[in-house]
Length: 96
Image 1 (tube, helix red, strand yellow):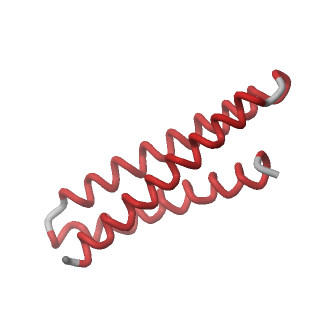
Image 2 (cartoon, rainbow, N blue to C red):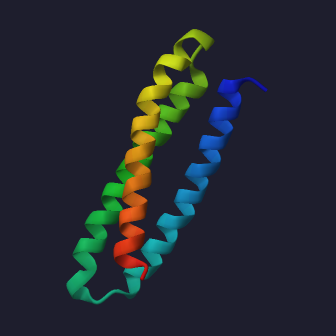
């Protein structure tokens, strides 16, 4: 397995984990009082958009030739870091 394949596999596993976390947050949001639901919805919408961007970049990485994937990796890692921060912020704020 190449470094690129390993990176893509690990990244897909992390995205699957974050999909499960989003599902948990959605369930918690459903239980939230109406007053706070709009904040939850905005946070979840932003996280889902970031996840979608990370998935698109991951697919581009998976499809890239060997020479191009190293250049693309930095952009993917930036999107990854932003998504991870969103999850941590949401977890701290809503999953007390």
